[in-house]
Amino acid sequence: MKQKLTITVDADLLPAAKRYARSRGVSLSSLVEQSLREMAGEHVASFSERWRGKFQAAERDDDARYAALAKKYLQ
Image 1 (tube, helix red, strand yellow):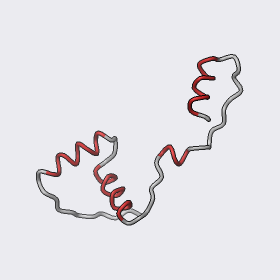
Image 2: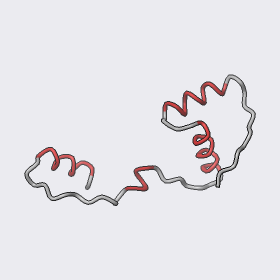
Image 3: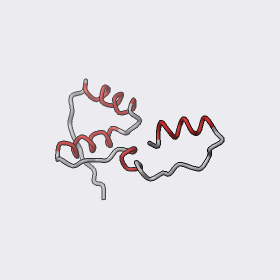
């Protein structure tokens, strides 16, 4: 369950922090939460770590583009 947290930061830091979060496609709250988890020693699995090994290659021997992508990303 999520809870609200009020923090106070330097006025010059806030716009830069918002830009940093936006450039990574996350909210400022998510960025702060992730940073706190890292400091607390909790490992947060990335998207690719959560999905690694979950997909199997399809049988498509006649498609050269598929074969190249499968070789690059599935092995």
